[in-house]
Each structure stands twice: as C-alpha cells, then as structure tokens.
Length: 416
Image 1 (tube, rainbow, N blue to C red):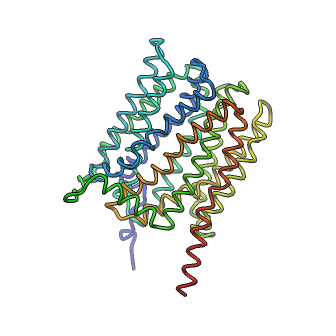
Image 2 (image 1 turned 135 degrees about the vertical axis):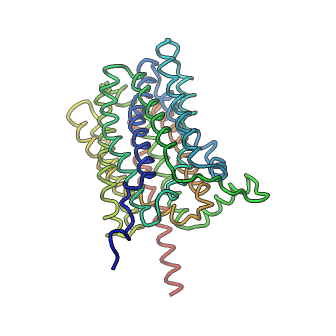
Image 3 (image 1 turned 135 degrees about the horizontal axis):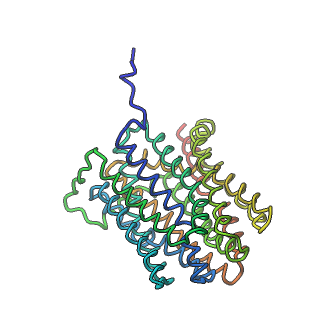
C-alpha cells in the first residue's frame, strides 16, 4: 500500500514552482495597471487620435511578429531562466523611462511607441522561455495543475489591477502607476534568481543553423493537425479580438468620457471572469472532452462578447456590458488553458521553445495587424464599427478546430 510519503508533494510545496508563481503574479499585477495606464497617457495628456491609439497597441505586439520565430530557436540554445531574468530587467528599465520623461515634461507619442515595441520584444523572449521552462519545474502529472494555477493567479491579479490602476491613475497620475509596474518586474527578476533547480545550457546540435531550427519548429506545428488547428483558431481570435480591443479605451475614455476608474472596471470584469473560467477548465474538459470543450469555449465566448457591445454606454447599461464581457472570458479560459497544455504535451522537450515561438509568432503576430486595422476602421468608420467588426470576426475562429476534429474522425473511421 502506498503511503503519503510515496505521493508527490503538493504543487505549492515545490519551492521552485512557488518562486516562479509568486514572481509571475507580481509581474502580472503591475502589468494589469499598465494595460490601462499606457493608452490613457496616449489618449489623455498626449491627445492621441483613434488611429494613433491603434498604432500604440500595434507597437505593443509588433515584437511577436518581427522576432517571434527566431526567439524560439535562440531560447532553445540558451539557459531559459536567464532569458526570463534579462527580460524582466529590460522591461523594468523601459517602463521606468516613462515616468522620468513625464516628470521632465518631455514625454511624447514616439517614446510611447518605442517603449511599447521594446516591451513586446522582451515579452516575446520571456514568454517562450517561461512556457518552455515550466515543464522542467513540474512533472507531466502536474502540468495541467501548474498551468491552471498560473492562469488563475494571473486572472486574480488582473482582476484587481485595472480597478486599482484606475483609482491610482486618478489619485497620482498614470506615470506613477507605470512606475509601479517597473518595480513589479524587478521583484519578479529577483525571485527568478532564487530558483534552485539547475538551468543547464542546452547542448547545441552539431552544424545546426538558425534557419533550419526555425523551419523545424514550423514544420512540427503545421504538420500536426491538432497543433495546426489550435494555432489557426487562436490566430483568428487574436486578430479579430485586437481589431475591437484596440478601440475599446478610445470608446470608453474618448467617446463616452468615462473616468479612469470606470474604464478599469471592464478589465476587472474580464479578469474575474477569467479566474472563474480557470477554476472550471478541468471540470469542463473532463465532461466534454478536450477538443469538444475548446470548441464550445470559442463559440460561447464569441457570442457573449458580441452581446456586450450594444450595452457600452455612459449609463447603467455599462454594468451589463462589463458582466457580459467577463462571462465571455469565463468561457474562453477553457480554450486558453487546454490549448497550452496540449501544446506542451505534444511537443518534444528539445523542440518546445521553437513550437512555443511558432505559436506565438502566428497568434500574437496577428495582433499588431489587428490593432492597425482597428485604428484605421476606428478613425474612418467609428470606434463602434471597429468593435463590431472584431466581435463578428471572432465567431469564425472555431472553424479550423471544427475542421480538424471532423478530419480526425474521418481518418479514425477509415482505419476502423
């Protein structure tokens, strides 16, 4: 008979995972403030137009498009924890430059664009290293639990972040709120240095070229029917979602004139919904099966986000919009968490960085294009038109996943 000594330790009793979790939570808490603060600086003091606001969002994701693929190959050659630490320190420096420029009265939109782009480049490297390093800290049996814990804590910190950020911006201005985020990255870097698990440098492949390693990651993702479908579904969702989300604060703060605190409430609702969704993910996946649960997740979330749009007004209807927006994230978390876990399970260890980078390149690389499109539509057709275009487009995101499931069943029936 097995004893309690034979069972694996509880996830949060693993010191290295706990340090990673706390560091990521601190970083995400600060980032939740900057999600609101950065565009409000552009829209408010700097008077950005809808197109200029869309350009800022584009810069915040442009790094994934430009360096996403080589980032995976480079990370697979480097110590992954070291990449994460450098990423945290670099983001702290970039964010710290904004309050300094504001206090010197020299802050400009080009500086915001430059900081946004720099953050996206460093985040591209950090996220690839982060998802590739996690399987080194926990075993396969606890990988789903670890992903759920990390997504839940991200949602919890994001729940309080925008609301607190809105109040903080109103009380002490947006540059001070951005300084808080810079400090959170420093704290995250310190905790990562305290992880004791060895972080060996991967053995280089003799004669391997960067181009060949990138191509290997691309081939692996797009030759695997399920990974290909997951990538395309997430890409369509992100592309169309960013068309609308790039104009959301322009609508709320610009067109409707809502206060920073009220603007933050919609992000708080999204984060609360995401937290609830992360708690329900395992149960939903068990009941519907992983692929069925992901399909339902994408469809239901798209319908809820579309249903929220008519309620974005500067009156009591805004509360309904926030609730529907939050419920959309409750539904979407099943796809988000399950797809990450499936990608980690189906990818060989030496390829995981490149697989993650390929996914990020396609999925996150669509976001600057969506932000640019959102800015153009918002500038010339109105912010609400951009929001509707994005929401209706997201309803198409489930198509690649449905086609992959149908093809898989057809192959199974032929083999039978």
